Length: 354
Image (tube, rainbow, N blue to C red; front, side, top):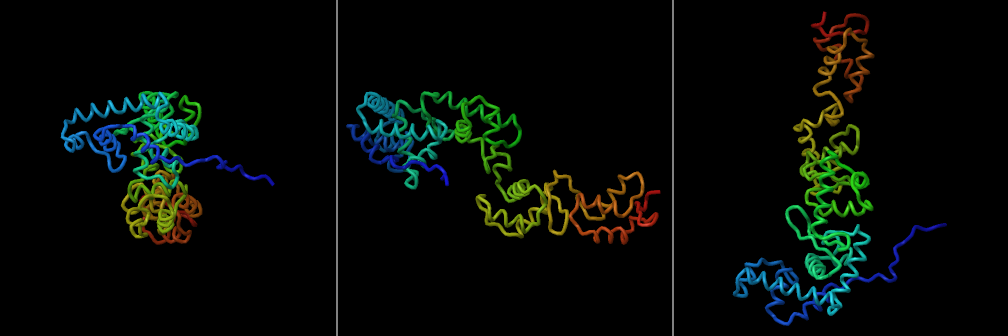
């Protein structure tokens, strides 16, 4: 019997990023210069601003910036000349993993791939620092639009990567609704879906849920409150659900803050116009075409739209298309509500109709 292929771990190694960073720092002779680099990149603690470091060292913000730039240039040159083996070691490992991740990855995802369960915020800072010095890597700095990322340099510099990320966002906007990576790949000119996924992950304007990608403001991929989560659950189910089922589905989901009460779910269903009560505790999406209001309201609407009186069996059939109620409930409404008039055997019209 054939077995599923397994990943070969015989030659796999876990990168010792701590040792690599210490080796790189050891070639910086001046203590002040090491202080600037370690604090700017957060190699031992949180990252610090130019102003904070300037105040600590008694120099201006601009002088800190100049020194940082000069130090990084020296380190990069040393790396290119092969004088810092640690840079080459880190570079080789990063490229190997990026090749499997779509040639680009956020620093967070890359560090997870490199270090596994040893990945920490401090490790991410150290990976980003080492990648900055590697000549065959491109580093994308974090800002309001992009996550801190690392790519293989031969496939593009920082400007090109940002442009490619923007193109993915534009494609999602034009598509107008959540899409799979395969669908986005079909809309874009890239070698492989994995590259599209990597680009989408770098953007701070995109979110995904169960491999459906869309804009952050779309609740179907980025549900931010209980109502949005209810909407996602109903949309995924594709049919009406009892409010207790919805609550259980949310609790079993991967949503953040999924520990909600059944009563809270019921309250939100009542208040949001996107949800329609179609039976005893049973709700549907308004976009599915179910009728709002009571059973009597639904019957009245059906009779109002009909050019002639309808047999009770036909009324029941039409009501059940938009409401999940018992047949006896429909018949009871027909017989007891004054707005309905029996005009022939088992045949009804609205009382005001002539």
